[in-house]
Length: 204
Image 1 (cartoon, one colour):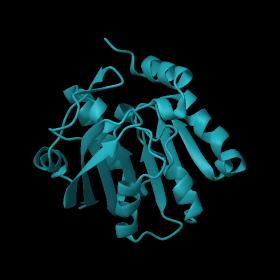
Image 2: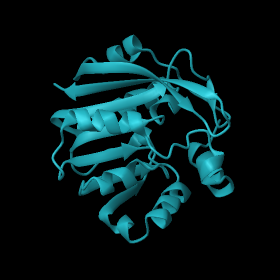
Image 3: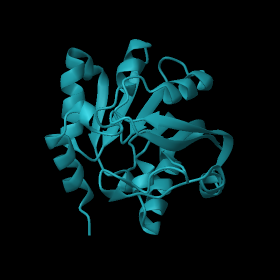
């Protein structure tokens, strides 16, 4: 069975920033969802599986003050901290597996681009949703982006679970109200296209 942590530590120890398929200097889709949420600058925002993505750079530049980045790979977070330099001190960094995560304080906005779809076992998915439910304030927002049914079936050599607007909505329907879903394409550094579905929800 795949050791998730070991796998991702190795990926981030051996590949450069631009050598991974999820490299994205400007995460436009995520930033657009955040704009639509009309959050206060002191809103609590968490980026799940954020690794060394650039979302946190953009949020700091926009003046958000309460940011948390969670990733299973310590190497990934260290790379992000190094890139940010002194600014890294303004971010909370947590090394954790998203399938067993419960945050100390509930957040206003939960963002997950391409972490959730790596959970393929029913128990892991249930645990993730339980942690999500526990970690979001009433009326808080969730944005999850996964490979769509037209997207890849694997990423970084690991099998993923594809989602549709319907399947993701059904999964979260018990505690969350869907706001909207969109399908997007991500161009990788290798000039391939990956199809994603992004959905936003509000806590009931």
